[in-house]
Length: 258
Image (cartoon, rainbow, N blue to C red):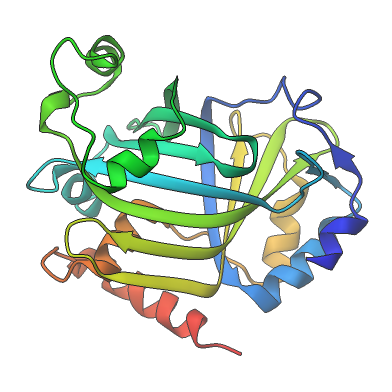
């Protein structure tokens, strides 16, 4: 996107002090057109992450769940202490991590991860990954995952492009995900949300943020959006979605807004 090229860049090394592995996340969902307006307004207060000359970075993910989709159901039902297990691949830098994300009852997100071979994501999507006792990730999973590792199965694959903005005080990150695509590893169904942008404010506590007023100015309101849950709800008709229906209708309207 041309507008991102006008931002002052910041490197990963310069961002090393703001990893925010234990943080408060606030998500916003908007259209591509409204995103362009937001990016124009953010230029004064934010820098853009640049990696390998890229400012729009490709990501890919494989999510796991239990055979009865307990992770999905727990999130759908609004329970605290919910978890996600995924392989996240940073495509451009050829780095992949096995990650456990936990959201506690104080709405803080804690992420634990361990580096894995870059081929593991493709292997998971092909159904070739199983977490066996005494396997290479057994200790990590038993320490951080609330589920029996051997019960976890590949459930959903997604890909998207991410723009990461950093405020000049370096107290927060603003990630913007576009070009979302989903492939359900259970049903084989696929879908894309090409007109949506998922904006996520990540900060250590409720520190003042320059983007909040800009979002309100553009009438972009907070809205929960789990890529795993929304992608699953859109590609697996057997899952319960009653608590997501209003959100899914809004997403559909945004997707078809010119």
